[in-house]
Length: 306
Ligand SMILES: Cc1cc2nc3c(=O)[nH]c(=O)nc-3n(C[C@H](O)[C@H](O)[C@H](O)COP(=O)(O)OP(=O)(O)OC[C@H]3O[C@@H](n4cnc5c(N)ncnc54)[C@H](O)[C@@H]3O)c2cc1C
Image (cartoon, rainbow, N blue to C red; front, side, top):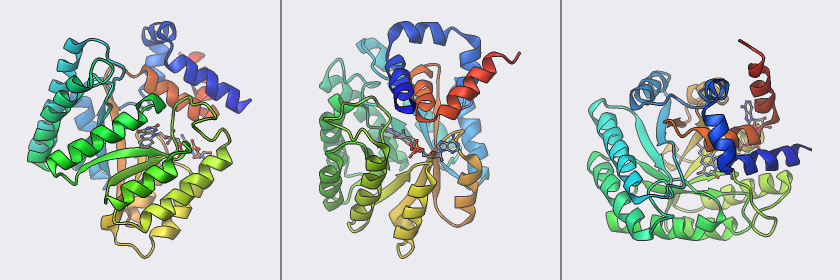
């Protein structure tokens, strides 16, 4: 039942008709803003200041994906460049996260790379870390390829990408990336995938997460342990107890398990919060609903509140 609900919500996350209904619905917007720092850059900067004051790092994500018109990517690049300048000028402890389909990957790889270079040039100049998010499996190979190209071209340790533990291929990908000393965020994976590509059962995903985390920590790579799952956090704490904190950090999403974020920071772990902002919150919000049935009931209850 839970799996079916997850699949329905993930289907709706990419359905254009559902997006246009939900995006215009005030109640949905209000509930979505529980997981999103706001719609403007100023709101994202304020949220980051509040996180930094709690000894938490941030990674700011300007929401958007699957952009289909080249001219629309110019505004994306501009917003990220403005964001990098704000992070630098205001001394925020923050990096950025971005999606390649937001930078025009569905239009052309060249356009996407050109757009990315504008942002990476500024990020390198300011020394601000950049993570290339991982989207669904049609984009896995190309994302890894563009990540490696940019990392090598910019000779910039602070460019990283993401590996999803639900994918069957991830163990091999992590092994290769570890040997390259890569900067990797390990998450479970948030998209609708076929059993051919992804483990359909949660216990298999969890076991793979622990296994590839363990293997990666034997390499020279930098690991971002991105999860809200107490079992994964405990396994990670056990793995990293003899490692220097320059080799890893914990990561969680904005608005999810905030008290646990504070506890981990108070225990001396580096903790980074992924801070999404912008008007294109719909697919991100639906993926958060799909992750946890309690979030769906929270949404349904909100419909009946004034
Ligand atoms: C920083 C960050 C970046 C990410 N980037 C990507 C990406 O680039 N690509 C991608 O595919 N996915 C990404 N994800 C999403 C990720 O793949 C998962 O979908 C998401 O994190 C849920 O998995 P989980 O590890 O938290 O565990 P789940 O298996 O979803 O949850 C396990 C347990 O965690 C606890 N939990 C979860 N949510 C809550 C909550 N709201 N309150 C209390 N307890 C809770 C519960 O005990 C739950 O049973 C990212 C996640 C994070 C944290």
